[in-house]
Structure formats: structure tokens, C-alpha cells
Image (cartoon, rainbow, N blue to C red):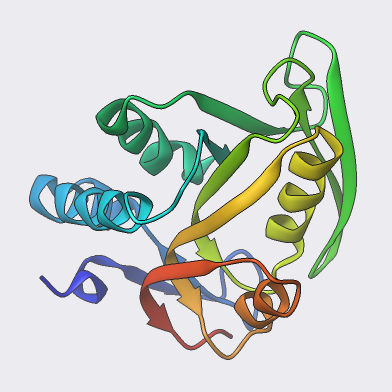
Length: 175
């Protein structure tokens, strides 16, 4: 199945000059959504890991089904002030600013290997922030799995240069 056919591209969203790759058209099609999840599961099965984490919010869509299928714990990496218990926090740079992500302090134990799943990798700031958050929590990043890689933006290269294993289901140019 060609998953690219299920991704809608929206010009000038969220701002002029950006071509937004929208996964809602993929997840609303049951066959495409199942196929994407099956492919992520196939990749995850080849990795030695203990838990699955996802970056808020579109990563949750895929990671929750993968965690359920593989019977693995699921960890939420959320925006600042969205988690109710004690958290670890990491600030990171975005293409157009800065942000903070957090995880509950009791989500990751020392030495646990974590797969991080998200819908898209672009500049890599959010993914790098997720890696730092996992490491601050005592864990190790076992792999990053993305549905979409914007191959001409530096995200995947950034993660690879830091020694992180990354895989994507499909690729598009970034704008």
C-alpha cells in the first residue's frame, strides 16, 4: 500500500510558506491506518525495548495501538503543565520558537529502553527534546519511529548524528 496517497498536503498552514503534511486523511481510512500501524509494529519487533513513548499529540494515535498490540507500557510525553503528577521537564528549540515537554517521574526506570513514536520528523527539535527527556529520566532511546520523514529538513540526520536509530514509513520533501 502506498501510504503517500493517504496524506493530505495543505499549503500555507500553519503559516505562509509551509506545506503541511496532514495524517488525518490516513487515520480516517481503516485499511491505511491498519497498514501504517502494522508497519510500525514490524519495525518495533526488530528493536530490543521495554516501553513505548509518544510525543503529544499525533504520536499518541499510533503509539497507543502499537503498545496495545505488543503488550508494552505506553508513556505520554506531553506539553508543559499537562501531566498531574511530578514530572521531569526538558526545554527545546522548535523551528519557530521554544517549547517544553514533560514526562511523569515514575514513567521511566533507570536503564529502560524506550521506542519513541511520532507522526512526523522535520527539523528534529521535538524529537531531540524527547530523547533528552528520556535520558534525564534514566532511560535510553532504543529507536525513533515516524510515519513521515521530511527528508530535506535536518531532523533525521540530526538524530542519526547523535547515534539514535530512526525509521520512517514514508518520505516527503519539507517546505
